[in-house]
Each structure stands twice: as structure tokens, then as C-alpha cells.
Image (cartoon, rainbow, N blue to C red; front, side):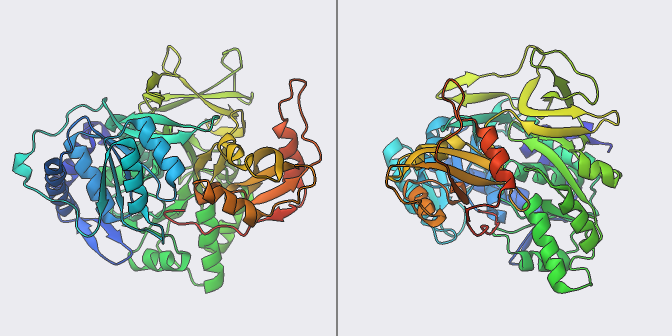
Length: 526
């Protein structure tokens, strides 16, 4: 891919550059069949930036926003980029426990949301959080604020200042702030565009939450090459297929759950392709079982280009259009443009091909630092390398194979979930004496959440539904509720009394589940 070196290195500069090149080309389309051009988005974002400034937002403020995947959300985010504030995107499915923790972690001055989305009163939650934390809530209903762009100061010029704080689960129950600049997000988006070899002739999609770090990845890829993007605030498979067909989408996906639902729609529709213009499905966020690839190829006649990334480094490796079926099913792809991958021993010694070890990454798309309780924590080594927490090896063909994780995290539908956070909540259930939350392989979710319980004396085993109600009552997001429950007499433990979670994973990954929940619908807010 050529020409990337000449692109602006701020998000506002990038949208202004694209609007000057192809002003009348379509930038965004939504499920209501509304469309906007690059020039129209630029002009509207300028007016919205002025309106936000008139409300009191200033460069240097941190603005948390929890919004659906809508055209207005992209416009608002670009307006915030024009102002030079720091953005903290929050996925709509999060509830009061998580949102309050994120706003507090980021020391936000503002919380922006909508009155209601998918039956939940986000406005009331935002006002409550704002009142407790002494910040301002902006609850949107109808049009975005607008003002006179001539009253704005110059746009930000730095591509290295922290402009984005994504909050992610770590091995503790509290979220960590993952701090990115425009430059690091742009590097990730260009990695996507280069690896997938997209152009202005392609049409892509954002059917997952735009607040996920994958949202700017795909937006930036579209701005870089002039590619239109279809958005949907809720992923309904049948409606999504209609959008793909209507607008000639060539690139879609998001992760294993999306791949399987696309395939299900194809099977239900019969032999005629439901989306005949699709060249491939692409995504990441969770492990993909090889059978998913083969099933999609057999049922839809197109490959799946799966990749590997994380909030700290949104694009690490990616399957590519020219890769073989063996490479696409057995590896996580090759490092994307500008990203380096190294495998080391626990002592830090570089390891050669085919030797398992710790996966380290370096590149312009790597985050700057963590924000933890107001402190800046830089986990990179002296040469700028970051340990991902994953275990894998490099192949002679340059592809990366992941074999496991050292970090105690669950990756469900692309979201990193802290088991400890769920354990803290489940430990308060009267029937639970001890609990271990683990992730088990799942063809749809990547991993499903399994709660392994020791029961209190005389207590009846709680149901999945009962534990879900308990988690929701504690303010936990619905997608963090256990989807499987297993009862044990005693937890397997180390001599220091730590629970041997790997033994529980090995046992229940192969045993039929005792109690499971119906898979939750995937959507742009779930």
C-alpha cells in the first residue's frame, strides 16, 4: 500500500485531508439508509465542535462518552478531535458499576450519552454518576449541539499527545486506562488498510460498538483510502445481510460470533449468496476455531481473514487475502504494517522460530502508557517493547501462532473481562462459599464465562438465571454474567492455596456443561 507516509497524523487532519480529496464521495451509511459524504461530515463536525465549545468543553478536558454506533457518534467523536479534548469511549452495554469506575479512572470532566438505548435509561445513569462525581452530564436527545466554527481556535497539531483513554480489564477488578494518541490509533488503522488491501472501491462495515478500539481502526482505514462504511447500532443478522446486499459491501465481519451468524443466514437463505459482493470476512478480538473458517468457506464461498490485536496495540497481526487456507486456520497472520513481534523466554532471551515463549510487540500503534488510580504506568521495556501476556511462537513464514495466555483474562466477543471483577460480585451470593471464574472455548463467543462454585453448607446450587440477576443487581454489565455454572466439592489449589484455574479449564472444556445459558444476541451494544 503506497501513499500512507504522506497522510496527516491527527484524526482531524485526516478527515480534512479526505474531504479535500473526495468531498462528494460517501463516507457513512446507516441502517435507516441515510448516507453522508466526507465533506458533509467535516462541515457538521466543525459546527458540533463549536457547539460543544459554547457549552464549556475545552482543550485538555477528558470527555467520557457512551453512545451507540451511529453516524452522529462518529460526527461527535470527530468534533471532540477538533476541539483537542481527550476522549474516553465507553461501550453502551456497560452499566453503572463499570461506567462510574471508568469516569473516575479517567478523571473525566464530562459524561456524554443518550437518553435511552435498547430499553436502558442511560440518561438517568449518567446524571446519577455526574452528581456523585461532580462532573457535567450531556444527555443527547435529537440534534447534536451546533455553533459557529469561526469562533474556534486552531485544531490540534500533535500526534503524540494522549487524546484517547480506553478502559480495559486487567487481572484486578478495577479497570485500567489505556492511553493512546491520534498517532497510535492512526498507525493501527493504516495497519488494517494495508493488510486487507482495501481501496476506495471497497465498502466496509462497523456492526460492532464504535466505542470499541476497532471502531477508529476501521474509520481510519476508510479515511485513508476513501472507503465508505456501513454502520448499524444493533447487529441483527438478517437486516445486516440486507444492508450488505443493498450497498454492495465487500468487507465485513468483526469476530467469530459474526462469522458464524453470517453463515447461519446464508444456510437459511439457500444456495444463492446473501451478500454476493463480499470478498472476505475479517476481524479479531477472540480466538477463531479452524472449523469456523472451513464452515464459512464451504457455506459462503469466501475466506475468513482473522487477526490478533488488543486494546494496548489494536493491530498486531492479520490474515491477508493472499494467505493460504493453512495459514488462515493455523496462525493469527503476519505482523501488520509498522508492527514488530518478538518471542522471548521468561528470562527475556530471544527465541527462534517454532519455539514457544512470551509474545512481545513494538510499533507506532502501541499505546503510550496505562492510567491507574491517577498514576502513569509505563510497562514497556527500555527498547519500547510491550509484553502482551500471550504465549506463542513465530513460524519461518513470518506468521504468528498463539497457544495460550499467561494473563488471567477472559476474551469474550472481543472484550477483555477480568474474572476477579465477576468473582467479587459472585462471592457476595449467599449460596457461594468460594468461586473461580474461567473462560472456556466457545465457537460463537470465542470464550464463554463459566463460574465454578463451592457451595455454602446446605445451600442449593444457583441457576445461571439466578446468578445473572445477582450480577445485574450489583451493576455489572449483562455480558459479564456467567453463561455456565459448575459445582465442585473442593477447588483444586496450590500449596499456597491459590486456585488452580488451569485444572478447572482442562476439566470443564471437555466435559459437557452442567448448566448453561442461551447464547446472548450479538449487537453493536452487547
